[in-house]
Length: 224
Image (cartoon, rainbow, N blue to C red):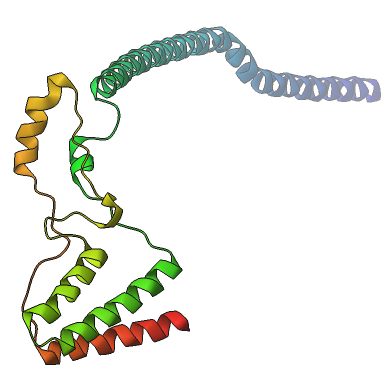
């Protein structure tokens, strides 16, 4: 009887152990089944991801090629524009140099017809101031036509004759021209007239005294 109970107890223990074993096996299967499913799905996912990467690589390479072609087109356009500008600048410089070469050298007729101003040194200015004072004094004291003759001679010495010639003929116009240019020079000369250096005018004693005072003040300034 005791032996039978002992055998029955061993059988129950074995059954419990077997049940626990089967439970552990079930747990292990549940634990490893998702990994197997993932392992079954991975090749397709990898294929899909690889195809997407290849497509992205193709898009990137196409974009790079397009950018490169655009840069090459832009560079060629810049080169064409630079070449055209250089050619136009060369043509412009050539036309300017040709026009400058056609211009006659030397002073123009306008420059020759324009009288050059007389330049005096300090001593000459002092002498002219003294002579002007003398002239004003004679004009102030003149009472007749005979008294004005020395004033006229002194004025001619200071300012030149009434026709516009100056002392020493320093402002004489150069009229020597080439034979082919005589007609054109004469035509231009008729349009220009050399300004006269002095003119005759009637002055009173008050005006003469004012001029005398002004020239005296100028003489004093020059002496300072």
